[in-house]
Amino acid sequence: MRVLVTGASGKLGRVVVAHLAERGYDVVATDRTPPPPELPGKFVTADLTNFGEVVELLAGVDETGPVDAVAHLSAIPAPGRHPNAATFQNNVPSTYNVFRAAQVTGIRNVVWASSETVLGLPFDVPPPYAPVDEQYTVLPQSTYSLGKAVEEEMARHFTRWDPQLKLIGLRFSNVMRPEDYAGFSDFQADPSVRRWNLWGYIDARDGAQAVRLALESDLTGFEPFIIAAEDTVMVTPSAELLAAAYPDVPRSREVTGRETLLSIDKARRLLGYAPEHRWQHHVGP
Picture 1 (cartoon, rainbow, N blue to C red):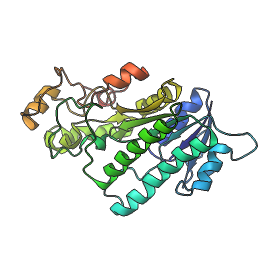
Picture 2 (cartoon, one colour; picture 1 turned 45 degrees about the vertical axis):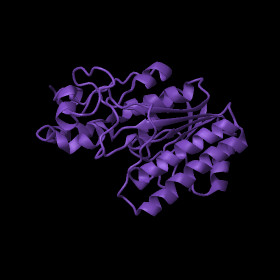
Picture 3 (cartoon, rainbow, N blue to C red; picture 1 turned 30 degrees about the horizontal axis):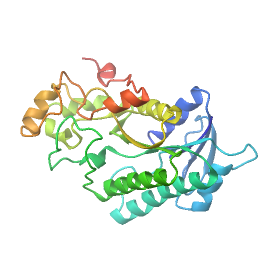
Picture 4 (tube, rainbow, N blue to C red; picture 1 turned 60 degrees about the horizontal axis):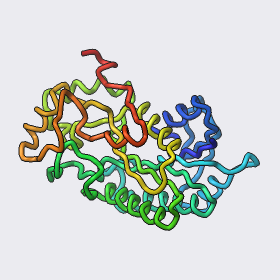
């Protein structure tokens, strides 16, 4: 499979490119800035807000022909880094262009980075229940999150127009790499520091696994999936964290140990997602 990976120079994108290449994929990588020189695959600089450039990326930037699938990870990755209007004007048109370019070039396999923020982060308004999952209507609380909610709504309609189109939105939690885990000790004294996303995270290597599994899935239509680690960033049991921060929030099921409160049950069931990395593997007990 020849796969276009957008946002290839980003924190998650670099890991996805390397993971797919290791698994035998022919990777075309794109971003506005070049990735590290050791990253595999063919790199092309492109502006995804330009529809013509996106069409050419999918249709084939050289004589080797079109791509078979797209992993769209390019975006301003969080609120507060740019003015709100700039974030929206970059992220949403870029995703529209990817969806539309896939439609007009006949590509039916698109996986893209949605976000945990659509679940209601930073949860200043308590979630409807916990662990949270994909069942309730999205609750964007920032312009960044609003953009992701708009992208998911676009995906519903693109796949309504073309039922054979696969648009899988991966609601990634806070992406971490191994070098980030040393800082997790700073969270332990005050759980409120990480309450904003129910103490969740995702190891970039497990994020790359989720992208590959989504690309390989035979699902059609639009499907959102929460993608998180199987534990939290805390050493405190998850039920205790919930009891202290959200005593009145209903529990959707029993919570045991340090399990994630961003439910990955759907991703396990439909994608075969099986996270392999826990932060404590890198910093000790």
